[in-house]
Image (tube, rainbow, N blue to C red; front, side, top):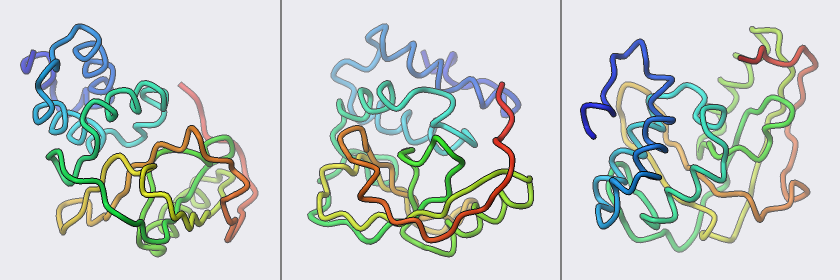
Length: 172
């Protein structure tokens, strides 16, 4: 299974699909630590993990582990900081959020540079049960990312901080 999971760096976009297939095939039953590592490794390697798999598939896999802190199962936090996200239209309730507004602004400006429409969002939630993972600490990404399961959250709870007009991102 690990050999299937470790394609070349050039093939990193296929890793979430391979992970989901291995999960459906039962390779992670009773293997929460391995699943936690595989989930976060897959999540962090893919540029747009929300587009590689739908949020229900990701949430199902995260649900088995409970909560992941960096690469390992951990206790869910008792509260969440204010979180930020840059999003293209239609992806406002995506799973990747930052606790650093500047990092979200970086992605918002990247969307502008690419000519894409974008919104800069803020989520001030008191419900820590929506958090499924937290990746933090200085590394090659220099990001402090929260992964959220927002399937039960109403978009009305999001605050739009800025909006950029532009084209939708390319598909496929």
